[in-house]
Length: 173
Image 1 (cartoon, rainbow, N blue to C red):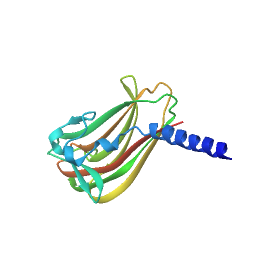
Image 2 (image 1 turned 45 degrees about the horizontal axis):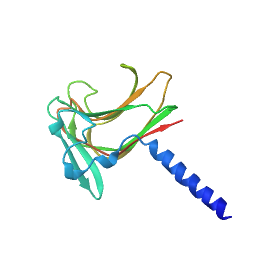
Image 3 (image 1 turned 180 degrees about the vertical axis):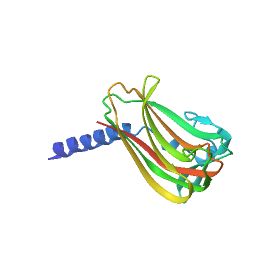
Image 4 (image 1 turned 30 degrees about the vertical axis):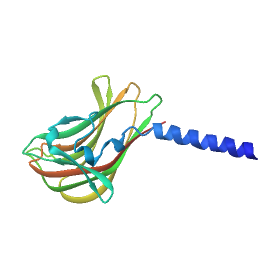
């Protein structure tokens, strides 16, 4: 009986370790004390991002500025055997005014690449003023896809803010 319990405990610890490896965004790197995004994130207009804590939750804010590209991007190599990716989190906007093109809003996106060729682009957008909304973007991973990009922020909006929190990217079989 003791041996069975020990094997079960080892299995649970192993399963938990394997599951943790599937989470690709190290959200713990986003700390309000740093006042900037982690160095692994590439920034277009980095001065327009702020990290804060609201009610014990870390929030990243992108402030739109008259048509500027205010986007943070992280690129990940695709773990072997990945057949599905799911990006989840929460997003809200405040007084976000669209630019001249309809796609110029606040956004969170998941993009898949085979080499330098983008093969899929799934986007969740917000505009105007909205309270926190959970989002989930799930995409199948085609053969040949070798990397994934996550980006969030304001895509050439005139003004306003976009907040994201609790970003999580999971790779699944």
